[in-house]
Length: 145
Figure 1 (cartoon, rainbow, N blue to C red):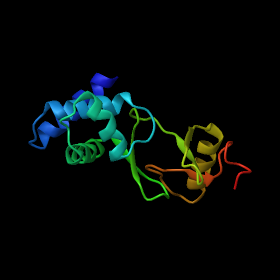
Figure 2: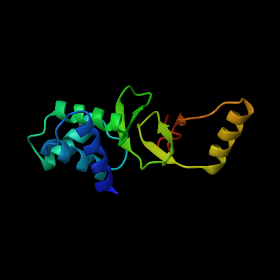
Figure 3: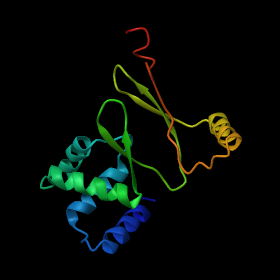
């Protein structure tokens, strides 16, 4: 699946009249092999281990392109940091975010999805996309507030 997403990105940047470079390839491969929600700083640190010549600005611009192409999803949680994650097409999950330690827990729940669909239908609303983020305290921080 990694190669398919790389090919998808390559087609996108070609369409935009941009070039495929080794640095972009290192960034996208590192991004797609990493799990979780990465900030530009997080990804830059990981990519530097693969290619020490990759600059912060290149990582930033490449993440923006990845987001525009649909390979990455840009997330804005309440901590003010932009993070990026990769999802397979048609994949969806929601988030539990700890307001103390910053941990982000991904989850899927068919009952929540069904309820959201019922609410939208009740109001004659056609959902194109949605985000569910719940903020509180994770197991390790619960009770340590």
